[in-house]
Image (cartoon, rainbow, N blue to C red):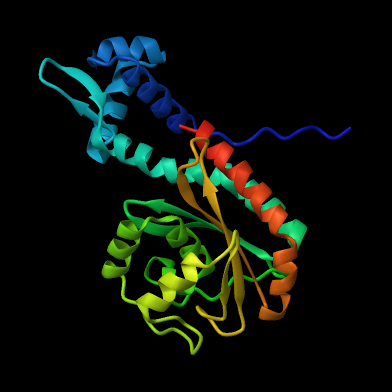
Length: 252
């Protein structure tokens, strides 16, 4: 019978993490002696670890000799929000990718910009070549036009005033009036018919939260000839958009 191999653990890292947990448990800070007892560490080891953590910005010694978490902990926490979001949405996007056999994209409307958050692709479902950032190409992408179509007139004009309609392919709409008319006449699914990149078409649907507030957009990409199939799969796009909206609503 084969034995399960135990993972190789670094004791010094464990000690430092336990010490940081002890520091975090005291909102007003705590002295090294108390932290040593709580982390079950020798006092000398505690001092060495605290000095190292302070040097790297993960702990700070205040007047009076108490220790608190350093600024870099807050920076890590802020950066981890994006990773938690990916952990939440990646399985949802991957399921749709495998079901439709197409690359899947998710964008969010954040800070008055349309930001691409994640892509689920693979060897058989390649993504579009992102040669121009989606933030600067909303007018030429299904995912961007989908968000713009949900804006009222004032928000739409404000966005377009800050983002020139750059000519990316011969099919790109570069006239504001024509773009707005196309957004107003669009149905439940927005399309990019080789407007962002030649050889690639996209379809997108909006993602809203429980209050029906726009969150972003969900899209797929494929060769232009497969777009009719994408339209036939619109119900799957909408169903996945609802799953995303519920998941984002329930997640802090």
